[in-house]
Image (cartoon, rainbow, N blue to C red; front, side, top):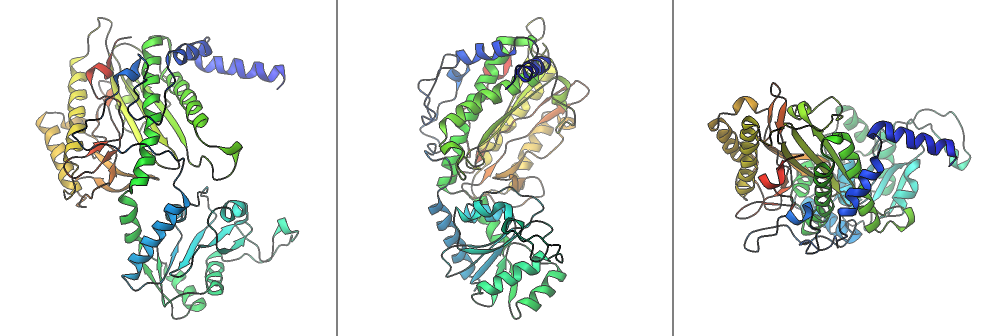
Length: 483
């Protein structure tokens, strides 16, 4: 890198963060004692914010030990497909077709980037490996994981007979990729007379299917897949827990950064510094195999900090770029995943004013929203409906007189896509099942006062109570700070 380029990077970084950013980052980094991230108890935690982490209650349901793997192994995918096939067999279905990338990833472990390019996965009951329709840019990814056979098109839009990577460059007729898919399935062969598909087909698609695969019925089985994906297996929960080890450390780093540098920094700087630091920890621990495909898939921690009036908007449309000040509300929000598994972790802060006091109105909103978090955890029991949990939380909010600060439902289901059904909402009567996962967001917002308090975590449904994945406290000691 030339000196002019280095100078540009240095100057642009200083313009964003202000002079001394690297020194501020190094000062907080030096405070963090290296720990074994496979140790969920973190006995070696430093004397900084990590020392305040919650310790598991041995008498209560709690998260599993963290996984020692970076992604779900292929054997897990094979067992999952076997479970899916067994459920299909109960409906006399001997073949399936999935076109939703989330279902392909869940069943086969083929992690890929989704765009306008269609991809599909097909299997018969007796097939030992999947058949894929896939675009040319993914040909190495799809063939190097769990691959039986398939049909490749070059790109979207695909021209008939055009495969430039094979030296075949021509302006052929545009290929109908749904017909291309059906023709490939016909060539592969269909077991039985029914194909279970993850969604309803359009009338135009059904007409094409009848022409290419006459006598084959397409039946929507998306309900089976979403039921499977909603209830997490022990392997999924262990990987989910592992991602929270890093996210918890990120929250501790962000808190230390704020306490160390106070009003000298912006919320943007805290978020970027923390994200930089924690991903260095994460990627140093993963088996990345020098960048080889299928290593370190969907693994990252992102930390987003906002302070002041921007906290009063549930989904802001303005940047997080405000100097931290006394008497403000502040939120540290994190999203983490390892091998695609993990979720949100937010904590809501109150910063004392110039007199060292905490605003009574902020204290009220903070306390009620925090109590709602505890209610959701305690109410998340197998056999309870999502609507009941929402009802109890909203009823408590009204009882406490904060109803005009309520802007949304308490929580949503959590999966690899982020938001997943079901929802902790008044109109969702889904019955909770053990090992379902939910966010935790009974936020309260006051735009007039320029403050808001929203939380999140992963709450896992249990038999007697739910439990959280994070060890970051919800206490006044952690969240009410002086800078």
